[in-house]
Length: 66
Image (tube, rainbow, N blue to C red; front, side, top):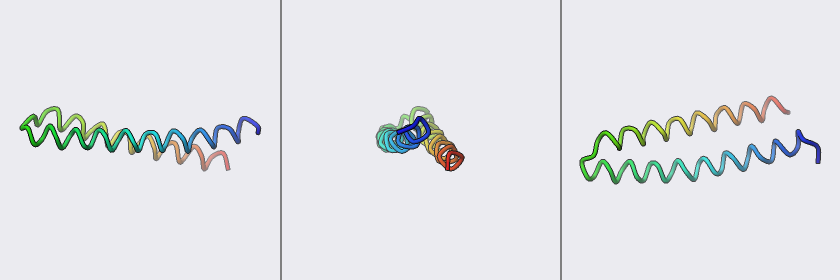
């Protein structure tokens, strides 16, 4: 497999890994909100959004390699 093919595989792996982390961040955001720690909950929610944006960029990268 050439480097382009390897990168496509890595992109899928990175996206999946990011999605798993985003779920964890979201769970913790909910937990912090339930405990009344709004600042931490808000930051974690922002991290979830950033992670989703990163996955969008990774998908754009994958399309650029097509």
